Image (cartoon, rainbow over all chains, first blue to last red; front, side):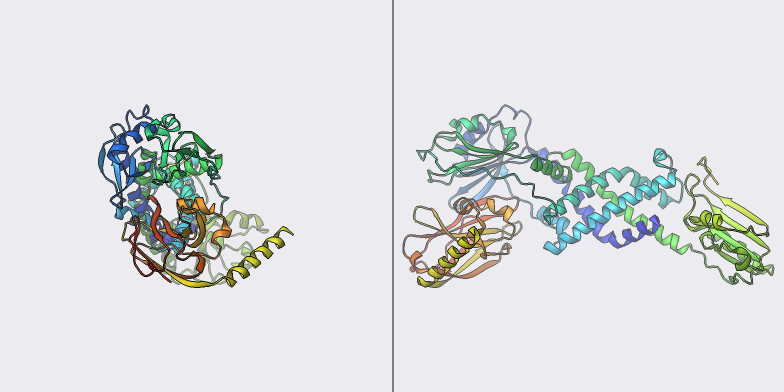
Length: 434
Length: 156
């Protein structure tokens, strides 16, 4: 049942899930590159005022300074009536180069969250994320069952090359995939407002500002007291508007600063909901936690491999279903063969046996163990012998086609008189083998 | 009761504002071909001192992003009543937004200014991307923006 569920959701979601994971893996490179670019070592003692002071001479038209979670500093400015942005060395205040969003990454991000289809695409991505989570969980449960329980989860994996690859890779990537999928699902739920709003209230815009001539930015008391490492964003007052203020956002909250007195006029700390939201966002994107992002990206890269091997395993299993020819009716059969199988291989043996008995002139009825009727006397009146061919699955578990057999057996009121022979298959590495 | 009074007030306001002479204004905003998602725009009126008067149009549906339209957000205090029925989809890069609305005559040639604040996800916010005086003489003449806006024209 779980296997069918796993296969079908996998087949349905393949394309969507592979697109999500490949784009996700590409995006995971971003925080690493940003981190490598940002010169963050030794910035802990620098204040926002100090850096802004340095920028005042190099970027007289500065309008906004942003510090990304990885620590890179971007200054946005207007020069000769046109806007621009530069990446800044936080220690020296020197320009590293012009900053711009890579159009390729913007495109990949849109592909990742909406398949480039805007709102309908976002719904699709949300559903794909859900399927991804379901596939991961059902896969993990199946693997545990195959290996004989959660405690045995690290045991060597048997099977064909593809099965081993599928299970082995899945076993390594399961935690990364689970984290990506749950956090992704959370973000999808936030987008569609299925979760309560996380945003802290905005600080009140100050009614009374001094409105005097602006002081030089490096002298502002509030900015001197904020270390650069705490900064997220500072927006300068609009040029020549003495009643305007600096708006500042730090890791703690956001507020306004008077441009002449340098006082913090109002400040609203982030609430816990917003902090939690930002934490989950960081887990998903790796922004500010580049190594985790990279690990999740590597985990996501296993998805195309899992899909490919998964489809092949499913196809082989489907193809190996043996069709029993000349299956006699239960009433006329002198021999009944019951089959218990998980991966269809026992059906292969049953078919060979069935054909051989047929050639020897017997009327043979071959069915799955689950289809066995408990009123055997009336259902199989001419039966002289019963064969049971069955395998164990994992550590002595019942295979799929025999899952109800024991309850059927319990309901049997009269014990049939024909002889019964059992042929057991199984995996020798388990204590509960056969 | 409070609601009733408020509704009545609004009703009176609309009736009265309809009685004062109004005319059609068509706002045409063409965006640059910047790299990024659709832009949020706030088109609004201020007096000569730059004090907020009235919202004309908000492009962009998600109100949680409105705080990035800085100048407008401060003036309007982002009150829903300020932009109710005056919103539409965000504008994709390179595309043109055209809106036609009724505007009170008293705003024209009286020192009022048309302003546009713009914002794009993961990119800078532009307060006063466009600032133009609202005059009969300036109608039909395109003016350049300094951020995401390539050209803005109003026709009276």
